[in-house]
Image 1 (spheres, helix red, strand yellow):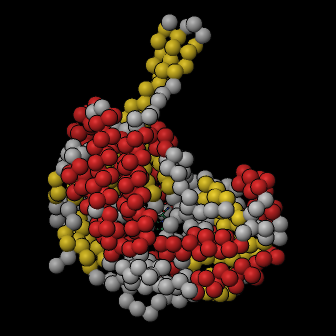
Image 2 (cartoon, helix red, strand yellow):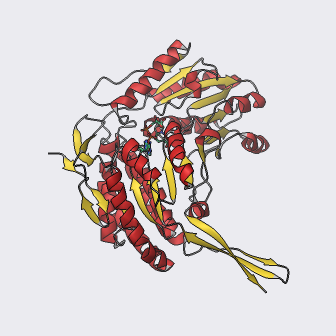
Image 3 (spheres, protein in one colour):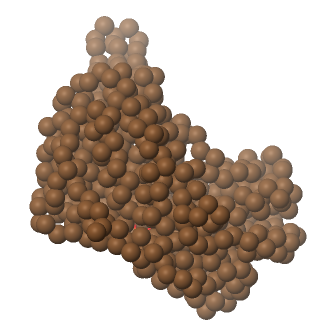
Length: 476
Ligand code: TXE
């Protein structure tokens, strides 16, 4: 009998009002592992009401006490790391080892980071000659809506919940319907940690139903959304006319630029990770690899050989490198792009096939021979599929890098310091990594340019997003 997940509203676990449930499937086995509420606007109304009631007391709770409770929640997550990693793996298809190393430790870090950040926050004062003293109050917004995706479920959910409630807001979170398990466990742990009822509410269900209701709710002051660009446009269309604050972290088609003077061993080893970690289902993966022509063939040969050694299979096995893709639909989407690559004239130099076993597995795939205008280099595939394209000089590398409507992140490999800075400055992306990838400091601004998003999260940017600045002017 599959587990039944309930909504978490006002500190209690509740069935959906309409009594309808959705199957939650393990992508590695295709088994139904849980039923989750197919919540609608009535459940969102209940959750928003609970959050609204809890807000005044939580906002008035001293920062030191909010911090203490968030730290207890971080400790509770850490104590249950193995269980949470296992839940994340069976729910999303990601490898257990990655969930242990990346997802769950990051959830712990998110809560610790914002729990302590609020103890060090400061605000500004502006003295107007001898006439007035202005000071800025940063006050919580009220009830905020948090919508998160399936690729890094607890990692991204906690990246939103932690700053939202640390700043004194209460929240209604809508995790992805494809990966509800760790959000549900987080709800239980929040009770254990002593977070008051109504501060964190979690409503499960479909984006077009529960998610949409949240974005349209009049009592929700802000929406923080991470997901696909098309969905993000819909979220903005619902939230903007209601004048909600909006933070949108959307898709990417990130360039990974390798100059001939790069440390090739390092560039190849890191490119294997930046291409295929989490089956390529990380918005920061470098899916368009551009290599200076003089080393292109060597790179393709060595990178291809490395990709062919990766093991695709049981996500719970520690020797597995790539687990399953999230769903049958996503598998279809990814394999369709591999076919499209061939139709567009590309050559598959590694992988290229669905793995012949139960579950949604695709080989790590490398495609060469495609121009930057091809759909495969323009559209987000979000799977273990990368292209490698040669470039002739720095100007061409920059042109190629900037040739999509996305602008989330970029990686540059070179030993030439001046060039590294020069190229970083002109690439259209919110993050540029030089000779590294996914090296994250939680204090830095994080977000996308162009169609990769609006707004920045991270450090004080997150705390600013989740607060309203109010200027108080006192005549002297
Ligand atoms: O994500 P969605 P999907 C990209 C990736 C992927 C594509 C689609 O290319 O193939 O997006 O993935 C909720 N109102 N990324 O469809 O729909 C939904 O329930 C309010 C990039 O699975 O964007 C879930 O909680 N909410 C990415 C969340 O939005 C709505 C991560 C994200 O789902 C909604 C995931 C609506 N109308 C996919 N419709 C990244 N940038 O990290 C859906 N949702």
